Each structure stands twice: as C-alpha cells, then as structure tokens.
Amino acid sequence: MEINRYRTRKASFSDIECIYELEKCAGNERALSMGMLIVRIETYPVGQLVGVDFSGNIVGYAGFFRTERLNGNAGSWYDLTSYGYIHGAHRENGSYMFGMNLTGHPECPGVGLKLHADAFKYMVANNMEGIYFGSRVPGFSRASTKYSIDQWVFGENGMSLDPEIRYYQKIGYRIVNVIPDFLEDEESCNYGVLMLLENPGICSPGRVN
Ligand SMILES: CC(C)(COP(=O)(O)OP(=O)(O)OC[C@H]1O[C@@H](n2cnc3c(N)ncnc32)[C@H](O)[C@@H]1OP(=O)(O)O)[C@@H](O)C(=O)NCCC(=O)NCCS
Image (tube, protein in one colour):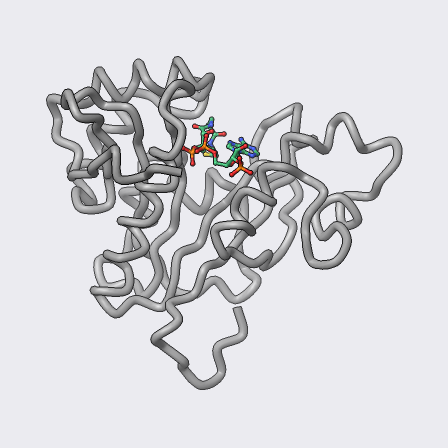
C-alpha cells in the first residue's frame, strides 16, 4: 500500500472544521466535537496530526495525549481522556502516548497507516515507552450470542476475531486488557480493549504492560 502518497503535519485551529467534516464522513462525529478539537490542540498540539493528500486536502486525523504507564488500571474512555478533551488526562512528561482517534477518509486508503507510522516515529524519537490505543470492539454485538467477550477479543492463534482489534494487531499492537463499560457503544456492547505498541528500543526493567 502506498502510504507515501500522504504527508502528515500538526493540526492547527484553522483545520478544525475540515477535521470535523472528515470525522462525520467516517461516521465518528458522535465521539468528537469542535470544542474537543480546540482543547486538544491547546493542550497537546504535537499530538494532533492531520494527514493531507498531494493537493493539501485533509484526509486523515489522529489524536493523542501523553500518559503514564497504565498498569491494568485503565478505566472508561471518558475517564482516560477527560471525556475526549484530554486537558485533565494529559501528562506533559508522560512516558507513553495514548491514541484516541485514528480516522482516514474512506476514499484514501493508507492514510490511517501513514498517520500511525509518523506518530510511532515521533514516540521513538522522543524516547517514550510506547503508544496505547483504546479500541472499540465493533464486531462483538453480532457475535455475542456465540462468543464470550474474551473469546472474541483474544481469538485464536494470537489473532483477535474482531476486525478492528486485528487492524491494530497487524500494526504491531498487543492486547493489554478488555475493559467493560469502556464507551457507550451498542456495536461493542460497551466493551473496549486497551492495546499497546511498545518502543522496541526501550527495555525498562519491570515493564509489565
Ligand atoms: C481505521 C482506519 C483509520 C484505517 O485507515 P487506513 O489505515 O488508511 O486503512 P486502509 O483502508 O488502508 O486499510 C488498511 C487495512 O486495514 C483494514 N481496515 C481498515 N479499517 C478497518 C476497520 N475499521 N476494521 C478492520 N479492518 C480495517 C483494511 O481492510 C486493510 O486491510 P488489508 O491491508 O488486509 O487490505 C479507517 O478505516 C477509518 O477511519 N475508519 C473509521 C474510523 C475508525 O473506525 N477508526 C478506528 C478507531 S478510532
């Protein structure tokens, strides 16, 4: 896949309307408001990345903040992200990034991977320990009569049965834990999954997740 068709840059206030339109197009507007984007850019500007195509159109957005290690103590998406505003959650010197949004325009395959690749490079260059992602489990509502949430999430042979979790696993994330009441989300039966991609260059003693 040609991810170099896109470049990424820090989002600015003038991008907010375009980002919001993009989120609507991807069906994500429920989880994001323009007010949230303003506070995110104010709080952690380098963690708000847009993906742009050759003509300069915004075709992707990834939103991160910084946090400390989550030793199995991750709560709901609302608690983790200060309801998506990040201001109360962000730790300026946190040793991990936490991803809240990863969105690509449906007609621009690869932009999500490009955004993620550049965020990963930034994390490594800044000597952080890794990136967490709080993922939905949107396939579970259709599978819940046949599988338990653990069977569905952890799957077989190390690969999840949920396509969205598999997307993150293919990038290199591993599952940390399943979180009940993560997000109000019918498709996921309100479950979420905390995923972690570690910085391969850092091996700190006692790192458990
Ligand atoms: C998830 C998303 C960012 C991926 O963007 P991308 O990396 O540019 O995606 P691509 O279209 O290049 O797909 C890359 C691969 O992931 C798969 N994939 C993409 N979106 C997926 C999803 N939501 N669930 C499962 N698999 C997905 C594609 O089928 C493709 O697989 P392949 O390499 O085996 O062909 C984009 O599909 C999107 O914005 N979806 C809606 C918002 C969303 O669900 N975001 C994730 C949580 S915030």
